[in-house]
Length: 124
Image (tube, rainbow, N blue to C red; front, side, top):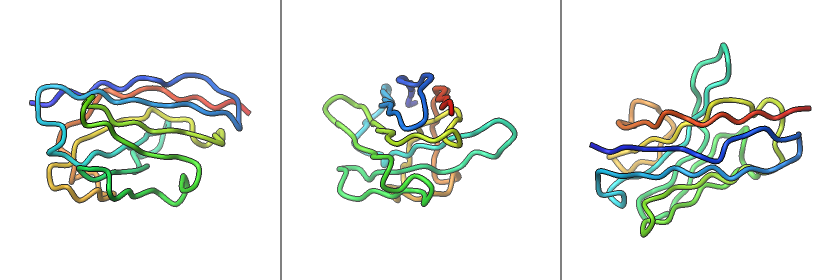
């Protein structure tokens, strides 16, 4: 069973940056595509970004394209999400998840293991 632990969240002003990390253990990390999702208070969880096994293909939600960057380091069993030009509407709990199908798709049903999340709060 894979365990995922997110870190790097915090409070930042609008226009600022954060770098989220997701450390995986208990499985073969390079077998999975990885995704990031987020959930704001009172809203449904939504797709943010995903990356394939070797990082050759990435996929972003329109709302974060050109502001967020997903990457991975298979030697460290870690996936990252660089958040730049943050906006108050980016405030949410951010979750990473594993995609055993390797699709890097946006549908949450593709993902089988999830972390507990890290809070990102952007003040105006």
